[in-house]
Image (cartoon, rainbow, N blue to C red; front, side, top):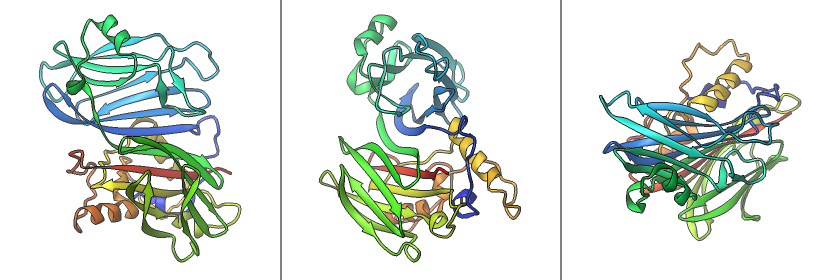
Length: 326
């Protein structure tokens, strides 16, 4: 269980360190002929904008997209050779270019005019973005669609607001706007501006699940707003947890980089002396609402391991941590 989900609410008061956007995407791909879950965490704060790329027990790297948020000059295209820690004598090369990247509103994740590529032995093993010709010209390596296209297993996003939380996510090939409103003891879920679900009497229904439709696709929706409904008044902060699950759902590797720091800060700022010291590799699958989601797709089997053993591409999950600002 993540103590921050179910302990005293917390306040992330330092606005300079508070993320404006924090998004983690987990992909199924291959590195040196071995299957791997590749985690990309996009982070934007008042003073920084970065991407952390991580594969458990293999490698981790953080790339700065801007020298600072106040700078109009983005960092130049880059590349780096990386030796894999779990495979002797294996080396990959990472290429990136965000000099012309376009972002929607305040999102940390680019929408177009960028690329990220991982190569090994003159072969593209992972590619993300739309500047394929630029990558080929720069690296001299041809991009082959079937070998380099990753499978998105899950998306984990931290959204910030007071009552309304909005994100955009792709379900079965099409992108949709997902909105969550919570006020007056009522929870509303909107898809592309249209109300898909209304949950009343949250004081009694602070956790639950319902089926909704997203672009003609049936999605299982789970919510946990225990912090919000049980801590009213001026100190009502903390976060709610929401899961949108298609099929068998996704995988949830441990949090790293900016996500790990955010959760660590939220735990320390809760000020609860009753909480034992913890090692923060907070696996979201150990939150009760996510255990519940896993049990629904695993036929009653549940695990609090840092990574689910499934994830063959049979499903997708969107996980939202909705943080209340003061």
